[in-house]
Length: 127
Image: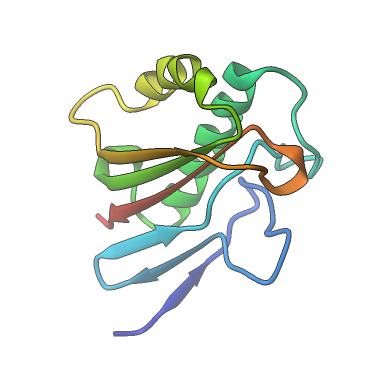
């Protein structure tokens, strides 16, 4: 197995010593995506709905750069700074995962990088 580093300018650049995703054979593992605008590198302004939409748009771009897609995601992990915003996040999430959604965990955390309210990571099948 060879680890391939995935990089795309359609999603925000890494803000630390990590890759947007790594790929090996038939699996891709994404880094957690936060609501950064890939064009400006700045956090999008807005509520959990706006932030979740940007996070999932970023995640989609990283997956596509790896040869995967939202439809091939096997598992996601959602990190929220306020679990009471789960329902709103979930309404946006189901717009992106319309059929046969992946397994998912959702947890509340004390804080996320750059003050984000939501972060999502995924494991997907390539191809």
